[in-house]
Each structure stands twice: as C-alpha cells, then as structure tokens.
Image (cartoon, rainbow, N blue to C red; front, side, top):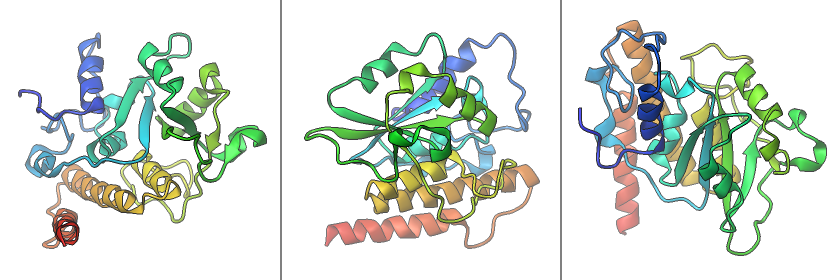
Length: 250
C-alpha cells in the first residue's frame, strides 16, 4: 500500500522501526488484517476521517523501542489530531539529534509531562508557565508501559533540566484496551488531551478525545469480533465536526 500524502511522524517512525527489525514483531492481534496506518481491523479503518489541526502547543512523543509497533498504541492519535507532533524512539545513551535540537530550539519552551511524585518539587508545574515571549510550549509525552515510562523518565539526563507538567486526571481512563497500572492511569492520547486543556486549548482537546473514542470503540469491536452500534463513536465524531465547521463559517 502506498504511503499517504499526509502521513505523520508516528506512521513514518513505525515504517522506520519495522524496517530495522531483525524478526517479526508479534504483538497481540498481530495475525489480524489491519490497516497499517490507523492499525484498526481493515474493515473498521478510519483513515479517511483523519484531519490534523493547528495548535499553539507542539508535542514530542518519546517512545519505548517497540511501542510504535503495537496496534493498541494511542500515541498515533495525537499525531492524527495535532499537526505539530514529532515522534522519536528513546535511547538512554544516544538520543536522537533532531529531538535534542528541538529541546534547545529558541522557538520552544519544553515541558516533560509526568506525575509530580517522580520529580523534584522545584521542577513541577501544574499548568504551563507563561513561556517567554515568542516561545511555544513543547510537551514531551513518554509513551510506553508504566514501567517503561518510569525508566525513560529516570534515565534520560538530557530531560533533567526541564520543567515537569503534572497532569491531574479528571476521570478514570476510558481506554479498556490494555490493563492499566492503576485506575487513574490514562492512555497516552488521554494525557495529551488533558495537556491541551491545561494549555487552554479545550476545543482541540475535545477533538482528540472524540477521536480517541472512535479508535477505542473500533479497536475493541475488532478484537472481540463484535458489530458496532447504530450510533457509533465515528457517527458522533462526524456530526460534531460538521457542527464545528458550520460554527466557524458563521
């Protein structure tokens, strides 16, 4: 299948990571016929409805080595919805030079999005500090299992000088695709949506949350071989987006 003209950072990273694999990655559900871009069972593909939006904030997804290969990964939903999203495979000893350049770029003010209890108190902010004039918030979201995420946070000295944005979950995760470490542990896409709320971009946060609901419902339907309800999450998403466009046109 040819690469879409509007392929995003995680789709490109997936292709690169797959190319250097020395053996097939056998994730759960690896034998299912999936769209290689949205990773849903092919007859539930939603790629035709994907549209990224411009935001004040930019995102970096710092991914554990095999996370980008997992069909259940929700980090790709951030790149689906937020135009300025970048993705890199984590390395303790050889961080990607392009990522390091972004972290030190004068246009950005980086924040590591991570729970406050794992950082020194002087690093923690509950909402983004007002960045210096002309700088955009650059939110670094660690993407992996909870054990992997803590390892990345502890063993990335090139992140140690950055402020930590602590997100307080407003509700339990809606994910249900993987077992969570705790009831208040959010999926990666849910973390990004809460981050956008903290950055006073609630409309894009809602857009991402709705897209997350589309993915979750269709992923679980494909996994459990169930049919979708008549009024499924995609129908709700399409209706809301039509209303949004109509409001913008007024």
